[in-house]
Image (tube, rainbow over all chains, first blue to last red):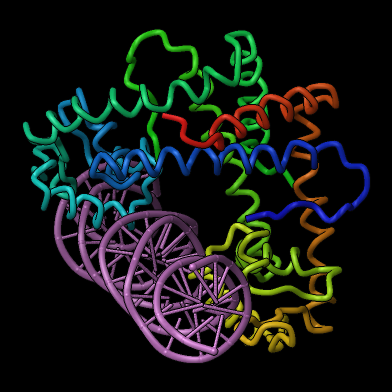
Length: 154
Length: 154
DNA sequence: TCAGTATAGTCCTAATTAGAACTAATGTCA
DNA sequence: TGACATTAGTTCTAATTAGGACTATACTGA
């Protein structure tokens, strides 16, 4: 992870870089700890939450819509399948593909943990920021994100 | 990683959560890719940059000042030592402790890669935000970070 | 003084990352 | 139609994470 700058001069962007990293890691620690207390790893939670309220989806879709890499997804799904939370169904449309869906047990788990986690995280944001500040923060973060995502930059 | 919300109502904080995660990951990808192109992993860069311009420090200090966990630090240092970039010196003050410092080769590496990386990242921020916006973003992110770091919350 | 507690750094486990290789299956286009 | 290109999901490597166990060393306080 990019460390605190070593005084390379008065660069205004350095005043944003560190708070971005620190805020994210502070968030991540709370996020991770709470999800683990609910009996899942972050990646497992990500998969469960993405599959919740859907008819299922392929590994490719799952990987695209979560932050789980396709190489890791196999292992994450293996362990979720072992927990009885997801099942793999061969796709009718494409013999290469597998449909991943929540079992009824998985859907129950989703209904249990998803709202719990959202409402656990809520006060951290609300005690720090007003509604208007949240709107500002969102705007600035999205702008930054888009800057990083522009093609052929540098 | 916490996924996009599944419409649990009109919760203003959810409008911040996703951009925070997305901005961070967009940043991380650029960060990681560039550091790797300089011949180091992120953790190695973190260690090199933290040791740069110092007389060295203990593993404990290094772990505290970087985002490298103490369990991982041993391996990171092993590989950096193998590259000839750091050396381990027994501490005179405490026989349990080891002082980690950059070799002259490591110091050269630091002088080479540190500015390169900072100036590589700079335009991403500057093309997205004005100086005033950076100041606002910093303020809001630090506030959020502090909210997550408060003890015994929830 | 010394028993009990805490700490430094290493080692270990389970889980994950990026990236790539692989085989079977599908898509493209001359 | 068929050669070539692309894709789906699995497997693999090197590196990393959090958390904890471990041994040697240092600290604390009765």
